Image (cartoon, rainbow over all chains, first blue to last red; front, side, top):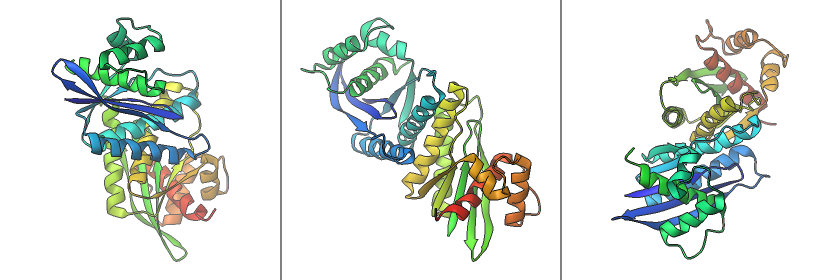
Length: 157
Length: 157
C-alpha cells in the first residue's frame, strides 16, 4: 500500500510519499512546493493544485493524510492556509484518493510516543523509521513524511 | 463572452453564469451547492470541487469572479471558508479559466452605485440587470450572479 502526507503552508507546502512493504515503511518521494509571496494568491492555489495533481497521477497513493489544522490566532493566516488546504484536498479528491485527517498531537505521538515532541525529534524519527541517511533539508517535507508515516500506522482506525 | 461568479460559503456555495450579448447581460444558469454540516469537511470540499468542475466543463465560462473575502473575526470560520474557496479556485484553474477577485464593496458599488448597499438592494439590481421576473430563492446564488455581473463590467480593469 502507498501512503502520502501533505503539510500545507501558504508559502511552502511539503509532501511525502512512502510504501508499506511487509512490516517496513520505505521512502518513495518527498519535496516542497514553494509559493513565492509575490505571486497573486489564486495563482499560488493553482501552483499547489497542479503540483499535487501531477504527483498523485505519477505515484498513485492509496491514502493521503493531512494535518487537522490547529486554529491559528490570526484569521488572515487561517484564510490563506485554508485555501491551500482546499486545493490540496481537491487534488486528492480529483484522483479518487482517500483522505485522512490527523491531529498534530496524534502525528507527534505516533512518531515519538509524545504528543508534544519537538519538531527536531519528529524529524529524527522520520529518518530512523524510513532509514534515511540524512534529514530532508525542508522541515515541511519532513513533516509531510511524518504525516505519511502516521497515515500508514493509523489507516485501520 | 461568458462570465461566472462564485459566492463561497462553508454550508452553501452559490454560483451564477451569464453571457455578454452585445450590450446586454443574459442569464445562463445559477444555483447553490448545499454542504450539509454533518458531512466530514474533506467531503464537503470534494462536493464543491466536483459540482463546480462539472459546471465549468458544461458551460465553459471565460472568466470566473470570486469575492475577495473579508477577513472574519473568527479564525475557525476563516479556515473553513478558505478551504471552500481553495476548492472553487482549483476547479476553475483545472479548467484553464481566468480568475478575478473583487472586493465586496466594489461588487456592491458596481451593481447599485453604493459600496455599502444592503443585500436586498443588490439582489433587486441583479434581477433588473438580468431581466429576471423573480429573485433567485437563494441569496448565495443571487450574490454569485452579482459577482458574475461585476466580472462582466470590470473584466477590462
